[in-house]
Image 1 (cartoon, rainbow, N blue to C red):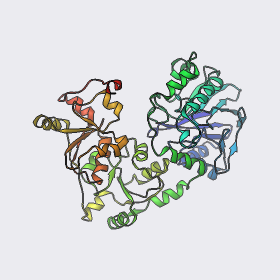
Image 2 (cartoon, helix red, strand yellow):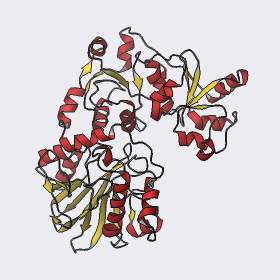
Image 3 (cartoon, one colour):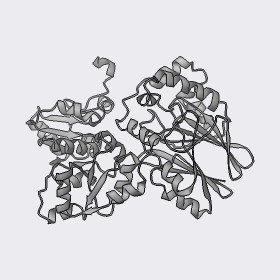
Image 4 (tube, helix red, strand yellow):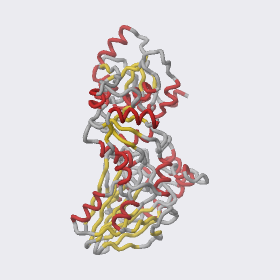
Length: 473
């Protein structure tokens, strides 16, 4: 029997490949399904089931394409009612995969259809729990997402269901079972996940705050719901795609991978109202870009930031990317439901420059240069675009907090005629922030290279100590 975790760092997402005696299952597949198909073919195995732990919010699953291309049955647990053919499994039901067995454990709480899959090896020993978003390493699934889709659910109600699911279905299992969750640190589906992507259930019983044996339901509800921040706006939209269906990834790629000349690119931008998305490195972008394009770098937390910054998943998009990376970009956009890339600038930014088209730039300075400016002009306006929690932990004295997460509210604080020096933690988010505002007419924003990390390393700034939020009330 083979068990393989297929982890995608930019989404902090784990899909799983399980194989026994020539049959395989895929659990929570990503949108691009060819790698799973090729893996099974290399192993001379047939994919029998596509097991979904729930309707995902943070990515669009590949269940439909995978089922269509392999004939595998799509399996959901109780309460799931998607708009396509699927197999509705029952709580406690056992599915055979070669000589292995997968037991269905309905575990509502994160969502009402949330289901874990308990794997038994060829000898009938329980060896692995594929826990979806019910149980993470160090945390549990947040109980406030399903209410965005179904109004009569409350987060306290869902948290209560989750408490019962954990106590009645998961905690009684053997300590040596390996927990294989759907996400790790960095996912917005929980609030305190570990960087580890697997662990024994026994260790989680000892270390995971939500599995304390002496915890009451009321205590659990309070602890699980305390500190939740608003989920990204694209989450409910991805849930609906996973429930209702979507275009094949093949169609999305065919539409998006149309190379356009500079003239054709400019014409498409003017005639369609498409958003020009430049995915190059922040500092490379700063040195020269197409006016009104925005930068969300491919090498950072690309897909989640696209979801946070582009509210309409049906928005048409024109890409500017490093030549050769276009397919990767279209694929990663499709993972979070952005299926409407209509082409890319063939040859990248050099094609634009060689055609004599207008190029814009953003001034980017070092922390040392900012220190000199601040020394000469103490009233220098510094914008810290990190999350409020990061800002409260430590920040430059006198800096204003204008989080990228809530960019529209942050923008309302600013004066278009005033010069602001913008930084984040390392330089990724500040360029996203600056490029978006520049496209909206804010031309007096200066980026600080290296962000707060470089600012601290310079030892040239007065930095605040931790400020307890309660003292700000």
